[in-house]
Image (cartoon, rainbow, N blue to C red):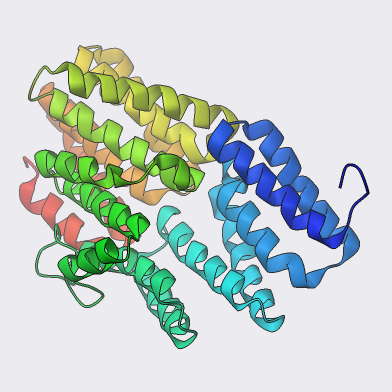
Length: 354
């Protein structure tokens, strides 16, 4: 394109190169610039048949490194509709796949996430795109678990899937992204339900895949959950291993937050609160917890706000401030209910110190 000029194929190439810069070289500014250029060319040249692949690459790999993750949802749904219209079935269904995952990541109501995953997975199976269909199953089952529609919230076994069967299928087919996803989501569930040792084991098993192969927001999820687990375990054992993981998580999240504060600032603040709690810096811990709760709410990440409230409650209770601890536990319970996580809300009510 630089030598001979722009053609229709240049549009997707700029988006792909932007995604490569972000994922492999961590050059967010240049990657985002090239991604925006691809959108500009798409609009200028009016190549509607290229919309689905361009939107898929940009809104899954580049956009949320700078802009609000919530703002990716409508373009991804539009990408699905347009791709199906112009016969780009694969890119359309991959866009639907990302739409489902982004919906979960954005803290959309879990019942809506579950229904959306179920619907699009059915459409993928109809078009014989089976691997992509199966990669949605862990997200649907996590939603079901949190809603209280499984026998054991720590196991991905229920209406959507059986973790043992899907792991067998994935290992045999070398679909390691599904394996990694299963273990990562199980680590998140284990942390949410206070089973920190199990969470750590699942987090270790999720590393079967190089994180550079994941989209940036998914990669940040791994780092964030690893950091929370490590801080929680550091209260139980004074191990350099946990502190190293926790500090690396803070540094990584700080970098993400510099470019996209609407997506990552509250996570950075929560990790800072956990660090201050661990080091005995009560004043800064309180300040950081308050800021994390406020920022998560302002940016509509109800699931992270719920976790921040609960962690603040644990902090205040450990310091003997029963009044503030009770308030935070109550707010955490309400936030989990707003998310649709009735099972976790019940778990919190039964296991809170009040």
